[in-house]
Length: 387
Ligand SMILES: Cc1cc2nc3c(=O)[nH]c(=O)nc-3n(C[C@H](O)[C@H](O)[C@H](O)COP(=O)(O)O)c2cc1C
Image (cartoon, rainbow, N blue to C red):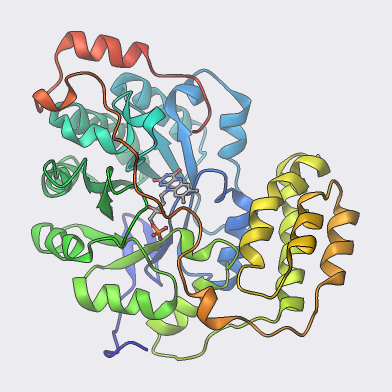
């Protein structure tokens, strides 16, 4: 349990109020509207960000990209995350979002460590190039600001211990008009390994006037309290900790309101959440039950983590093809099994270090891009909806 009771104030991102300053950190393949709806039901006053959508795919009219931009009618704030390398394309994507009235908030992805992304200069590689980073934000803010849409940036500490970028990146984001910065306190090289360095979050809070959301290794409500008291951040962003545990947002809201109440569902209650999640996914996939049930596989593994669910049952879940299959497997679970408190609050999902950081050739030689470098980079930006 946390030593210190914290008293966290509501925050504002432009016209958007976030009464409980807790953010669902965007996760590709996870934070689509079905999952966000579940999270928001538990914590109605937070900010729930969609997974990254590539600017180029939006501009190309890729239907998968547009599917990632859908929101449920119940969502209080429609929060999209854009990924782009070419400022002109990112600006066009922002224009599509703004003119189409598609979102209330845009977050920009400068944190992705995936080799496919960083070797094209994107995600967490991008803030190294100060000119490109500033131009991207500037052009997107120029489109969003007149429409009253706040822009935020999500960054990492840097590329590796020798190439930290977060303080400069934070200052640039502030100067170029971002309403907030979220710092995932790891470098690209650290990927998802070890523990994030929360001191870096504290340093960024000290350096900036805009809001800083701290991110990395919040596995339970007490971690959220600890991060706030150790760093002074205005709010927290939660990624892996809520995988299979959308109720974590209620726990954090309770903690921030000074309550020790925690939601500890039995396996039967977790099964009900799974069944509902699967049905929402069927809607997300326009009625395609098979796609929804396949997508549920990873969620099921997270939902049952820590419960005494054996290999045969897990395999049976992985073999489900229809909602009826899934419901039958859920009904077979020992319903009264109590919540595995200690395991549930431990790391889950991705936890490894990068094998090697992939960057465009000569990337670290200079902090700015040459026109030749830009030509190669922008030509290499693929059309995929996400990564
Ligand atoms: C499966 C997965 C997908 C992710 N996708 C995105 C993404 O689309 N955009 C982004 O900014 N960060 C993405 N992240 C990073 C998370 O938002 C978060 O910054 C990171 O997991 C650290 O927070 P945590 O320790 O609470 O998980 C992803 C992380 C995971 C595990």
